[in-house]
Image (tube, rainbow, N blue to C red; front, side, top):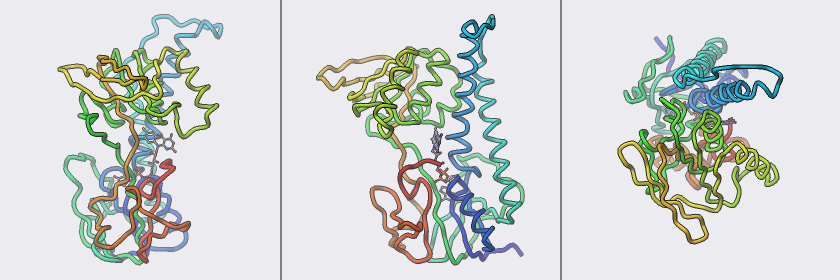
Length: 331
Ligand SMILES: Cc1cc2nc3c(=O)[nH]c(=O)nc-3n(C[C@H](O)[C@H](O)[C@H](O)COP(=O)(O)OP(=O)(O)OC[C@H]3O[C@@H](n4cnc5c(N)ncnc54)[C@H](O)[C@@H]3O)c2cc1C
């Protein structure tokens, strides 16, 4: 019979969860990871890795366009947006498979489905939502009831939605849609200039889109060093990116194949500008819902799980790690 009782059970197989699982197994604990969609989490599947693959294609395209500067020649330089995205997806798939291999190698059980904590030490796993449409890896354990002495919550985060600027996946993209763009839009508005917004702005600008970035704070890359952010801004503007700081998108009016954005420049002027597509990159929010946390009394602060320096929550036996436990929300 399949094992249902573990020393350590981790909910979420992203960089927080799978790394914690490997360490736990190395320390001799019987370990399981519950994952509902993709081993490797957002980072490997929809974040760090596929964006870097897209940016690498953009970088090479840029070099090819400027081959002459390096004493080289390249003619008829062009790209196939579909192939660029396909390469990025393939890189993610390969690494996702790598995490599956690491689980096996370290004898970590993978349970496939959506987990919730029903009581301290008890986790119920239901089948993943069919909308996620992801094939489970081989040899995973099925949904059911599981027990564990220690439970680590590593459920990550998802795109923040601002009222009036809701992403619809078609005209107004989150990072999910931006990552698999079917074509390079002629004009693109990026709302938010954190790392995610700026990476996509840079990718699409290099590939030829007219890109406008609107940031409500006074500098782009708001959590970065002021000098570095100012330097980056100059480089992006030199590349032809339009950047508005201290400005705000107040409304998005969707048309059949474009969006009209009302942009308040922060000095009392509101401009209505039409863009082919919009990326809303206004931050992420922790995945804290439907885990049973309220019933257990797990302390939540500002939308993320509150932990101490050891990753412990206020409830004995329950820990949290990664984006769900708050900033810096990086892998
Ligand atoms: C576009 C983009 C680019 C990024 N680039 C970088 C970068 O260059 N460098 C960097 O350091 N960081 C980057 N990040 C941030 C990085 O992806 C995250 O910080 C990291 O993925 C967080 O890891 P995590 O394990 O906490 O959560 P996640 O990676 O989000 O993993 C959580 C996992 O839990 C699963 N899950 C959630 N709820 C349940 C449940 N109830 N039951 C079962 N499974 C569940 C999810 O399916 C997911 O696989 C980027 C993010 C984005 C969006």
